[in-house]
Amino acid sequence: MNKLSRFFRHVLTTRVTAQKAFPPQALHDIQAAIASGEKLHRAEIRLIIEPALPITDMLQGAHSRARARELFTLYRVWDTEDNCGVLVYINLADHKVEIIADRASGRALQPNDWKEICRRMTEGFSHGEYGPSVLAALDLLNRLLQQHFPGQGDNLNELSDRPLIV
Image (cartoon, rainbow, N blue to C red):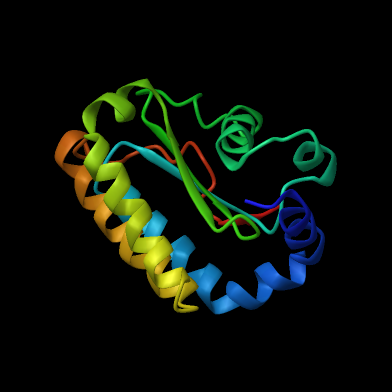
C-alpha cells in the first residue's frame, strides 16, 4: 500500500464520511440490534466507527488492529462480569473491520467465526451497503454468542449499545 495514498485517504476521510455511511437511522437500527441481541446472551458488544486513524498515529505506521486494541482498553470493553466483551471496530479510511474479544468470548468462538463476521461487513461495504452489512454481521455474532453465553433472564447491560463514531 502506497504510504502517500494512505495518508491522503486518512486526511480526506472525515466524520462527514462516516455520517454519510451511517446516517441516524442506520445507527438507530444498529443500536437496536445490539440491544435485542444482548437480551439473548450474556456477552457485551461495543461498536465503534472511526473515519480515519488519528494522523499522528497513521504517520507513525499504526494500523487498524492496534487502534482497535487501544479503543478496546479505552472504552473498557474488557471490563465485563463474564469477560465476554466484544469490540467491533470499523475504520473507513483503511476499509478494515477489526474485532477484539475479551478472554471468554475470544476462546468461545472459532477463528473462522470471527472472519465470517468481518467478511459480511466488508463485502457489503464494497457495495456501499454499510448499515445492512453491519446488521447482518451483528445477527450472526448475536447467534454465535447466544450459543456460548445463553442469557440468564435479566442480563445486566454493562456497555452502551449505542454505536460510537469517534
